Image (cartoon, rainbow, N blue to C red; front, side, top):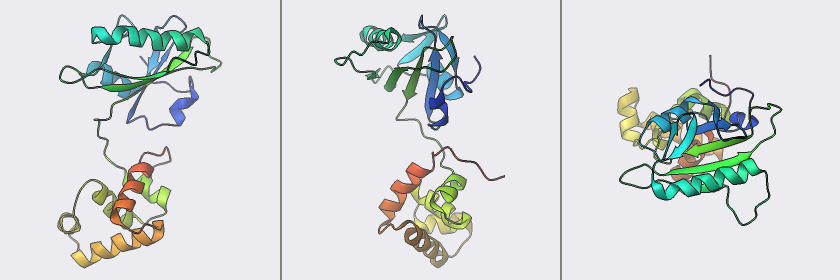
Length: 202
């Protein structure tokens, strides 16, 4: 299945390395999906693709998934029914947060979008995006990303062949530029900004 391009606007608003996106037609058949969605469906998650349709792995999730799709594809305003559910459970499947929403894209073949989030999937942080989002230098952003990935300043100094005092100075500069008082605040900001859909360095 080709990766979705202009079929649904949501694709431009999320980090597609982290979130699985699937467009479905009015009958519930899969029209297209992004790379992350295919990884999720091929892995040990709560959902899989069977004969071009989404299928729940656990029997107890079958009705939940059917309800999600029915509400979205029915186009009805069911206030009592959620369009987001958690499917799957350890130890058999990795739980997924699944969100289904009806869309109007101008594409007659696409009736709804299924968004799948796997909280256990780790995506490598992007120093380039952090630098652009937070207005940091490359050196500052790389040190900030290393902190967000769990490294200590001592380890960063060793891995980057810098003096510890230099790494600490870069951290301090990043704190000042982002108006963060603590490294924990900087880490939280980095984790958020790293996945914003902005251009990469050439």
